[in-house]
Length: 111
Length: 113
Image (cartoon, rainbow over all chains, first blue to last red; front, side, top):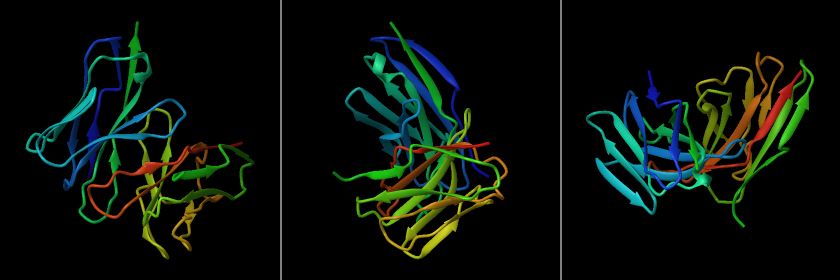
């Protein structure tokens, strides 16, 4: 079976740094994606990791450890507009292109 | 402008009626997907299609049907057999290949009473 765990909710202060963790147990692994979803809107792609290590993209970074089944999304210099849900998704089978999503972490940024 | 469109944004139906949600993309993507999102739940895959005239069941296909007659279009029918059809439905598409992200449409919120 496939299992992806993320914290349900987090709160952080504007200007701060926040780390959102994701652990996964899947039958295979072929990449991990992070998406941002504002309430009532479509998810938008943030990052992709398939090899161990850190991928940096502006204020957002994502880390992967395949041996530990672990990833995190790091958001720096938080802004009010970063208040959203962050979805971790794993592609477990090569060639199928399917993603299995976690339940998402709702981040609230406060002044 | 390339993208994915879903219509309508809000849809209301009576119990017992079938309803079809539309999804169109002009990104020239081969693969298309349908997800359902409920409060407190992750996105769950209903059906996906990797190529025209071919589609596979996802994790929660019961009570749903799809067709893929054109590359651009992947309509989803919610049948009366679906026990809890009220949900937010998201369509997505991607290029074929493991490293490619999925692009999502704006979603259709279906309410069945």
